Amino acid sequence: MEADLAALTPPRTHYQAYYTTREANENMWHPPQGLHAFLRAYYHVKSADWPGNTPAPLQANTAEEFAKLPRYYVMDLGKGMAEQVAADMPSLAQIAACTWLPDRELAVYAEEYARTGFQGGLQSYRVGRTPRLSAELLIFAGRTIDVPALFISGKSDWGVFQRAGAFEAMQTTACTDFRGAHLLEGAGHWVQQEQPARVGELLVEFARAARA
Image (cartoon, rainbow, N blue to C red; front, side):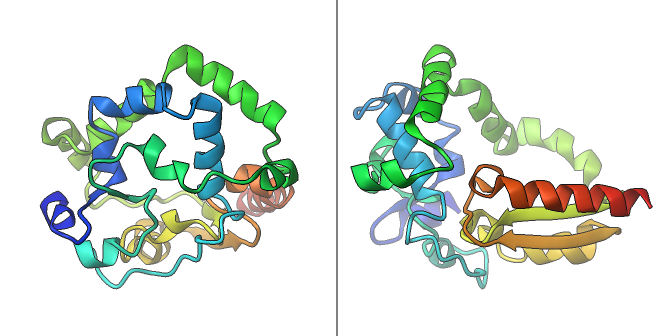
């Protein structure tokens, strides 16, 4: 698939492939625009605040269909994530209006990531895309999730549809006791931060129903 994405015009690469590279951690840890500004742009562009987030199901798992995803998912080949999201840095007015992630709270994230870097989290992408490591996951092939299950995401989250058929398979095949899928208005990828009250309500309702 990476070869097919690279053959597009302009050439593209999947963010998961980028996150396996040695350069990814350094690019995001010490970005050209500064760590706080990078995180602000990254959180903004994946939220309901960014007008480009109007997800729709893909028709197939092909490079041409993947190219419909925003650039933070299917990136411009040769760009780091820091450079990719820089073009969508929110304005000062947008930052001031962001009640779900005010700058004082974002500063906590920036301080911690400045201390730790991102490599720990990026390792999960290496496992998933390294045959020697991902082979161990085959033990779960064909297994189903048989406990009560609930799916909550933002209506503006492209992650729901980043692989054709996965959202539907989760509800009809992967989970045998599926209790509902909720795509919340006013939320993107950070649903628990963008709509915390509604997420909490749904979790309490789910827990009570599953316990009954």
